[in-house]
Length: 609
Image (cartoon, rainbow, N blue to C red; front, side, top):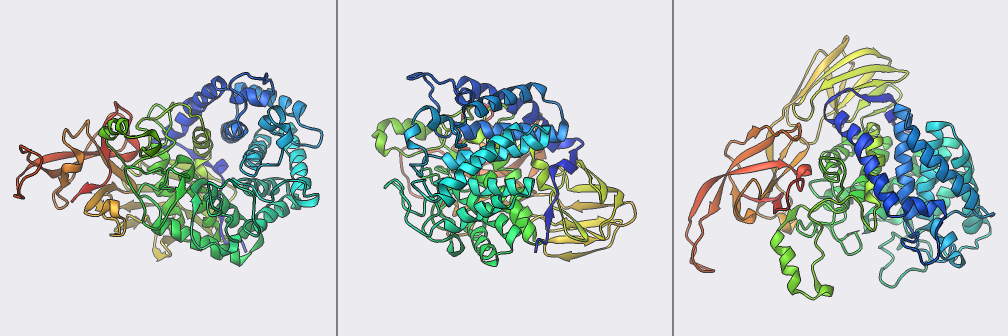
């Protein structure tokens, strides 16, 4: 049933180049930055259970999940690199506090134990099972990393409590969680322990969803939390984007474990709906700030783009899981689109600050405009610079944990084939293969493969969605499903993708992008900032048939580009009769993910053509 198996980050080592630098930035800078801000804002104190009445900050309903994702990131980093003794001391002390204050029946949530114990499992929208899920994932990672079992034992006891409340005794006031996550976590717990009960519980929450009316705020309809219909009947990606992709990932994982073809069919429909109708060019999803949600097909505004970091990371996890359903390059293509755009834009160049939202257009004049509008009627515009912590700070530790396991995205395997999904300067070492990639991809498109050993009968190399031409030297090949299939040659081979800047158009149904183009280089989306282009960005027009030349930038490895463009001449008054009147100018483009790392300024991805 399981046609493809993803190869763990444990077998992948970055030897240098871009992903080594970004991995280390997360490991040595971002992780510590998140920890300090979480200490300052009371998130770790919440799980120390030392809250005093009327003291601020009091434990919020989702504080447990914030800390859990940070612990999970630490676990992955220990698995790969060892060490991290200081972080282990922090976590071990925290686990002791959790064990001490866990209720006798196994319940564990810092907010409800300390603030409103009378409401345990009473309110579906209060993130109890969501927090439990992230704590489970953290416990699995930490147990695997350290061999210390106390945290996992605490969470097993909590899972038993959840089983009684929702399945055997049904004492909870609702049946499924308001924010999906527990389903994914239970499958991961099953994979780690082999205890079938955990898979059965995951299937219960998946199967139960959408089968009955659930208590929920009148502010939202049942599409918001994917409860309108049973999951196998879902046709479109709707509602809160993070909730949605967490559910869809759990559905895909459930298919992998059970072979339920109805689940797979639903996942295919949902994946297509997202990637063909509701995904930004950057890999961002969830266009509406109100509800952090999907809306309708092709509704992808740039100025108001929500495009939450957590949602894009969740889309990566959905694609990673779907990768196991059969060799199909479109899953790895989506992962790559997110990796080099929305995933990278989520973090500042110095690694200390983060975006919650990832807009595709910024005009500072709109900020001033808001002063003239009643607060309740203001346009909900994304922030213009990254912050070190947020009131709802789900994204920073999520970024920590995904960067810590980024090696998961690079390889998978079938019974007889190694599948290469992403490219970087790295070494793959497992029981079947010892292979080096030597490359500066995607600065250039040349990847040299050195094969020490390879027990696979063939190697499948993904041909990226953006690549028109390639060469393979040192081995024969055939093309199959978006992959270049080869026997690996003798000792290795060299793969070269033609790399050049190119312009992209959106479908005409995407109204925000009509009459506009975006510049890309390989998988990298580019933007213009006003600091480099001293004109009204919306007045600029790029000449798509003119040469586009690269220019180096000292702050990052990828090139900037300079293109030819025109700008309308200024004139007196507000309007005039139309008459062609413009001048040639140079347009400076930089990688989208690097924007907002200097002073605030206007920014645009889609340029008039």
